[in-house]
Image 1 (cartoon, protein in one colour):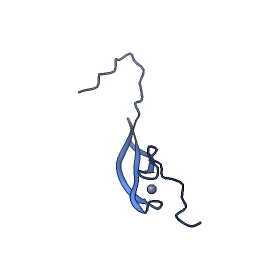
Image 2 (image 1 turned 45 degrees about the horizontal axis):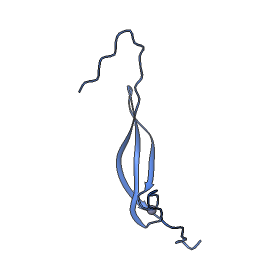
Image 3 (image 1 turned 135 degrees about the horizontal axis):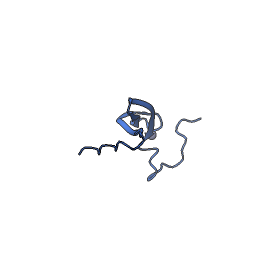
Image 4 (image 1 turned 90 degrees about the horizontal axis):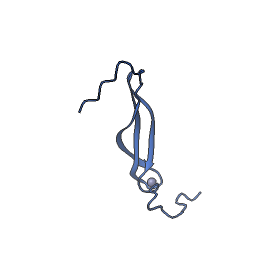
Length: 76
Ligand SMILES: [Zn+2]
C-alpha cells in the first residue's frame, strides 16, 4: 500500500507519528519479579526518529482489571 501523493496546491503537512518502541521487561521492586514493562515512545517525523520519553508500568501491581489489595510489604 502506498500513501497517496499530496496535491501540489495543498499546504505542506508535517506528519508526526508517535510509536511505542519495543517492549522490555524490568525488575519490579513491589512484586520482586521481572514484571515491569518499559516502552520507549518514538516520534516519527519527516526529520527522522527521535525518542521522546518512556512509558513504564507493572503488569501485575498496575493492572487496572485486577488491582492488588493494599499492603505494606516493606515494613515502613
Ligand atoms: Zn509490580
